[in-house]
Amino acid sequence: MPRPTGRAARAVTMAALLCVPVAGTAVAAWFLPTVADAAVLLATLAASAVALIKVVNPAGKGATLAAACALGAATTMVFAVPLLILRARGEHAVATVIAEGVADSRTGPTYKYRLATADGRKIPGELSEPIDEFSAGDRVRVVFDPRGVANPHDDDFVGVGLPLTAGALALLLTGVALTVPATASARSRG
Image (cartoon, rainbow, N blue to C red; front, side):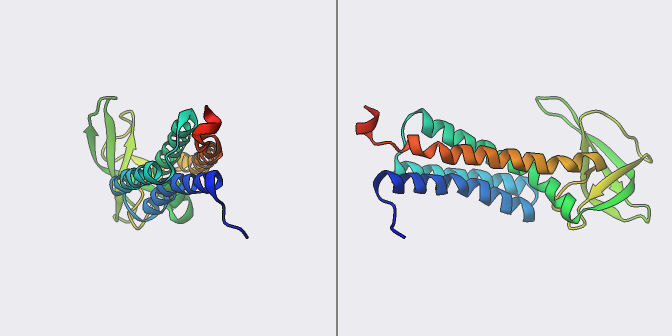
């Protein structure tokens, strides 16, 4: 198979570089907690951006839209992968709230709950809710990751992981499709 040259090679290179932050973030999210995954997202995004500018030198609105699609896809994977983890290896339990706290942010408070199983084992991570739903001693149905990578979530929320992943893939494919106009030569843009 002949190797692509010129514009085709730049488009293939750009498409591959757009995939790096998405794939890197998804893989990191499978093994690392969210904070570390966000760091991987930023590092791979920065490395891909530098490589894109140096190697491909894309231009025009297509390049900006392609980059925005890749960023959106990678960010979506930060939220989708923990839900996929819970779907794949999560354990369902009726947990007891053993501690509660509040984390304040610009968007308002987030209520955090530490949980334990019926046999007294502490569940790794914290259940986060936008409203104050529980008190110490309350029981709640959750899915939790026994390895502690993904925080526990309500039973019904875990199903959102697949649609989020589909949305991320659609964004990535849109970004890849936009590499063709983004790599047009200056002569053809003129």
